[in-house]
Amino acid sequence: FWSQVLGVGDFYYELAVQIVEVCVATSSQNGGIISLDELFLRVRKARGKSRSAQDVSQDDILRAIKKLRALGDGFAVIQPINGQGRILIQSIPGELSMDHTAILNSLQTRSSFTVEQLREEFKWTDDRIKTAIDFMIKEGLLWIDNNGRNIEYYFPGLFTAQRVIAGENMTENQHTSDNRHHLAIWCRAEVFTFGALTTPPPPDITPSVSFPDKK
Image (cartoon, rainbow, N blue to C red; front, side, top):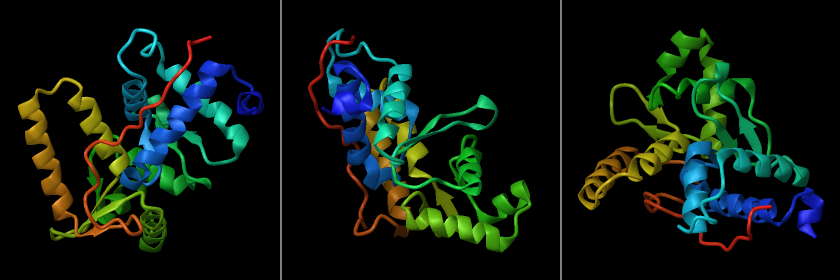
């Protein structure tokens, strides 16, 4: 039934299910926005290690997401400015404003930002910056670190993407060191705006699902 609604065969239907499950499983970490790179790696991990399981591309992911939009506005693709940087996948209802998208794109070249950096980069008023940041905090899209002189804001969707991508080629000892490093950063952040979530999320949440042959 759902494959008919989405207008796809079994392969893309099952791929869409896997995408939804990964996005739901990681939403408490990233607020519902995940990079295409991370989503691709997590979906491949969920599918297993066989050759047929790995026969999926980022284009397949994007095509499945496009079909998911038939069910509503829960999924969207956020393209980087000028085609340079990471493609982001939004899996939360509602459209992000141009200001929100501009802030996300500004994090393509750095891991965090401050109000002062946004003021200098975009020439926005403080009220405009506050409105954009408050919305993103409310939606769970940003982590706040007020340990230094200036409050810093982190976007976990890119933060966790770097961990997943870097982790592909890490040894066990490197994984241990990496986990300790990120745990230290998590502990520094004094405010986590994820509803009831007040402790660092698990380092890896990836569902395991079955899949048909690609058609």
